[in-house]
Length: 327
Length: 263
Image (cartoon, rainbow over all chains, first blue to last red; front, side, top):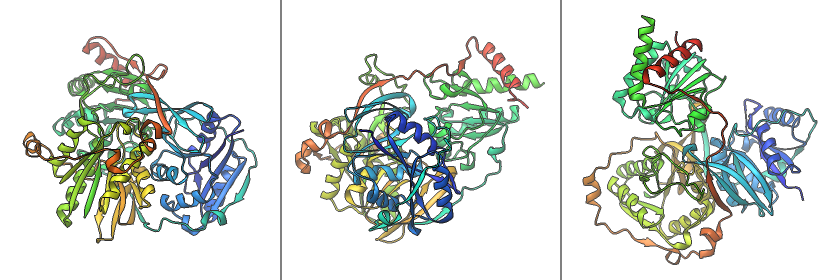
C-alpha cells in the first residue's frame, strides 16, 4: 500500500516557503508511490493565496482556516494537526524554528516516531525508513532506521532536497477547518509580538565583500586581525553565531538562518566550521574562501577555495600581502 | 522556583576532530575530550540567575553512565544545588522518546515549576524538551533567548526565530523551555569550584527507582535506531590551496583580485 504523507506548509507574507516544493521531492524519496497532501494553517486571504499556490504542485491541499491560527503558534497548531492527521501516516515538517517547536511534541501526541533534521532518505522497507542525518555539527553522517509502522513525524532540513518544479497541476483544496479546530489546546502559551532585529551600523545584506569570522578566532583580542583584513580588502566584517553569543560583534553582523541572509560577491569564512544554519544565510552563489585548521570542517564542502591553517597566524600575513600589493 | 535542568555529556567538537571508525560502528572515542553540551551551560546559567532573583533551588539531571557524573558535578560547581544521575543498562540505546520517558519519571517524582534543556546537543536533533513537555501536557517553547519571570504563575519568553527576530510569548508555569546560546554569559568554573563540590553526594536512579518498565526505553523501546556512522561522498568540495605559505598567499590574493574580493 502506498504510504500516506502529509507536508506541513510554512509561509510568510502570503508566499509558501521553498520547503513546500522540497518536501514533494522528500516524499518521493520516501515512497515514489506515496499520496502526498499539503496541510496549510492560517486565516483569511493570505491562507487562500498560499493554498492556491501549493495546489499547483500538490494534488490535494488541506486548508485549515481559523482566527486561532492567525499567528503560527506551534502549541495551538499541534492541537489542530492531532485532530485531523490519521494515525499511521508520515508528517513532514521543515526543520526551522517553527518545525523545531512543533514536531517533537506532535510525534508524542500522534504516538509516532520522530526523526529530526533529515537530509536524505534511502528507501522504505517492511515499515522501516532508512534516513540520513548529520551529527557533530555536520562532521559525521549517520544512517538511522525509523520504524514508521505507527506513523512518523520527520523534520526535513531546508535546502537538503532539490525543490520539485511546480507542476502546474490544479490540485484540490479541501476545507478541514471544522475537524481541525474542535477542542484546541495551547492556551497555556500565548503569542504576544515579534520584536524585529536591530539594524546595525553596517547592513551586511548589501555588502559585496564579507570577511566573516567564527569560533576559530578564539579570543576577543584577536578580532583586530579580522577588522584589519576587512579594511585591506574593502569588505565588511560579519560572523557566525558564537561570535555574537560572546558579544564580540552585534547580532546584526551574524550570517545565518537566525541572523542575516547575505549575497556578496566574495565571502571569506575564517575559522567558521560551516553549520547548515550558517551556510543557509549565504545566498547568490558568491565565491567562497574557507580558512580553517580543521580539514574536516563542513565549510570546505561548500567553499570554492580552501586553506587548511590557523587563521590567527594566516590572516595577518594575508592582510600584509594585500596591503603590499596595493602599495 | 524549583528548576530542573536536563544536561548531556558530549564530545567537545571545539576540542576534537570527529573521526568515524573504519567499520562505521561509531566515532573514534579513544582520545576524545568530553564536556557539558554547550547549550546546557546556558540553561544552567539561566537557572542560576532566576534562582538568585526569586529564590528556590536547581537540580541538574542527566541520562548517562558513571562518567556522566563529571558533568553534573561541573554544573553543581557552577551553582546548581542538586544533581541526579540516571543510569541503567536498560536505558542504553534509547531514542529521543526513550530519554524523554526517563526524564518524565524524574519530573513526576519532584515538584518542579520550570524545566530547562539546551536547544540541541551533539546529535543536533533538539527533540527531548518538546517530547517531555507533550508527555507531561505542559506548555513548551523552544530556542528561548530571553526569559523573564512575571509572577509565580507565568513567565515571558523570547524565541529566536528566522532573520534575527524574536517571538515573544507568555507561558504558564509549569512549563518546559529549550534554551538557545547567547541568552546569557555562562559563568566560569575553576578547579577550586569543582573541588568544593567533589564530596557532594549524587544519587543514581535506575529504571526500578523511577518505576519505568525497561521495555519502554532503551534499545527495545526505540523506534529510531542509528545503524552506522559514515563520511558522505560530497563530490569535489573546495580546491585546497597547498604549498609554502608564500605560494598559498600569492595564489589566494590573485584569486581574490580576480573574483572581486579586493577593492
